[in-house]
Image 1 (tube, rainbow, N blue to C red):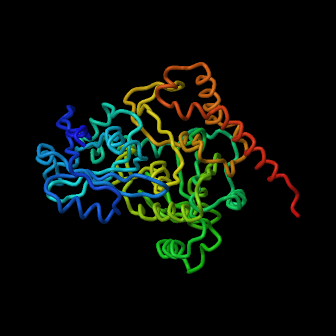
Image 2: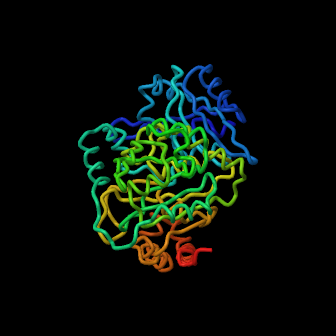
Image 3: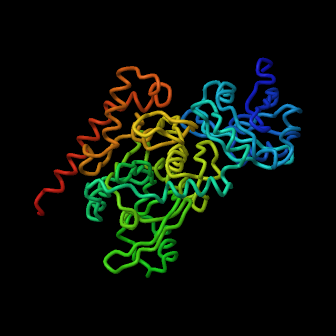
Length: 420
């Protein structure tokens, strides 16, 4: 225990400089439930760190007492806003256990926002957005809204139809991830629920529909930055809203046409695990959209972060590789400025613990497919940018694009089968 004394487990931001937060590891309690861990942290003197880990096929919580100096820095809830966990240091304290999330509890008992582990070191943008509160900055929000509301030129690829969505649903299970895009984009992620009487009734009430109106549609949960109603054949489809929302797959693809969709299914999960993934997604409904795309902050969600968060709610979670993505990219390249660690469809698609359950037709004609071909080639050539920013994604790209090609061709073959 003595070797762990004063181990640094995080930073408190003061402007753009970092102040270390040491931990006094002579007081630690392991193997608790979340409720017991919170009770322990609040009852102790000073500030605490709580870590959720997966051990022996189950999740548990460990509590570490912070030093007196750290407790002064994290005295109240206001101090927690700029506190960042050093997940690598916490993993070392946990002896290599699978760290899922961690959070500080201030000396006054205020519970901080859960922070998921980082894959990369915090960047300048990470520190700046916490220091200057980009999330609530109206100028920054206006820029992000403009990006999401902008439309790209139509690429001529047929959009997915409701009948194709119905075909896809025959291949889906609750807890699957639906990765999709349109006109060259591939950035939206969805948690598939399927049939759920309670959620169906909630959505029917929200949309002022007669009871049972949505019984043939697939319930989904996703995070939207913007949304709008649509009129299809004289029928108005209401919007789902923004932030983490309930929706149906059929309504979504009509309000927001898609030409690309890939269903990814976790390979190591039991039926109970899948129910837990759906429950985790349900628990996020109502959270606001995360406009700074911080994968560690669980108080807000963007679409692919919601998918990752839901999948990682069980011990048998798939491994998902994140990327250093430049928020201001140079067109036609993998380079840019202001890199930010992000959960993206690339990492979900390339997870070694997920398999393709269905892919839309004509995938080989779409820009994202060609992007993955390029990534695979650059990985083989040991391109330094690719190796630094997306090593896990790149290592799987060659194999996964062949699987994607086969799944897409299978869907195309299903489309031309004569009706029985």
